[in-house]
Image (cartoon, rainbow, N blue to C red; front, side):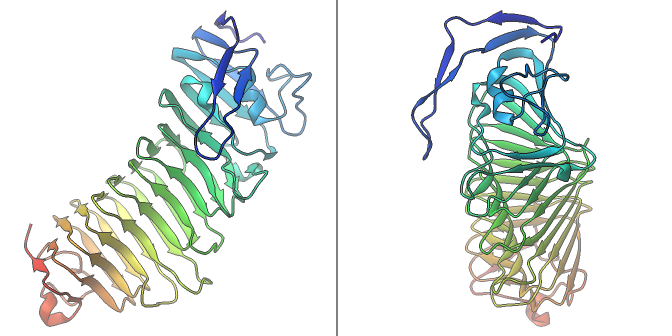
Length: 374
């Protein structure tokens, strides 16, 4: 391959051992591993016209599989970027691990029509991509991840992931990030979408450390049981000019929440957040807080529709609201708090509710709850 880069071959070949979770502890062997010490590296994959045996990963002789493109020409660089270009095709591969990479890796499909680059699993329980290297900065753009109906589409462990214009379809959980990973929906790309395809008990994604929807970015989540699960001790940040829309499934018997903010987690809401329920039952809520903290920034807009509770505030929570705009449509109760929480005295239900006096209006009820102006 004539990539116009400086390469240094590693001898003997590097051996990497995988031993996390239910994956094999057998060594993974990379016979052609080298480091590129300057410049960028481009590797091409074509699921229709490529060849893993005769191809060399160039644009004229691409590989056939994503796995081959990653392991055959892996390497590391302190400044360069490895670009893995995926041609329009269906790729059926699971548990792909770019963990041998150190540095910057970008997986680039069709940035105009991600559905033309479909990444499907070999098993409905196996993640499509597993990244478990803290030294990898990973970006994915223009890819549709689909059909992991009993597991995670992406499994992130100790990884920084930037998401461009991607789609998730028919996955139990779109992606899971562990407590050492950070995920960014980046402002320089078109909106990403999660279509849960009405899978029961599933989530668009589970955030276990820090995720951010950046300025100018739109995030659209539909047909889900839960939208976003902000796991224990995590931060979810919607920046001020972002727009996020979460729509629950209309066919599942039970629907849970648009966003769940779990114990010791921090939810920061800026921009516009649209939360759409479906058939109202006794458990679904737009946002559920469980012993956590929420900050709603000045100028934010929150729209709730078709929920039993707009807010379901459980346990001991601290919620800060400076000056946001709210609208509640067809919610049985705008705000429900069941234990001692510190809530803003004139927020959460200003627009579309019955004013600021929760006790008289009946839109908020609670037991031993503390209502204070923050």
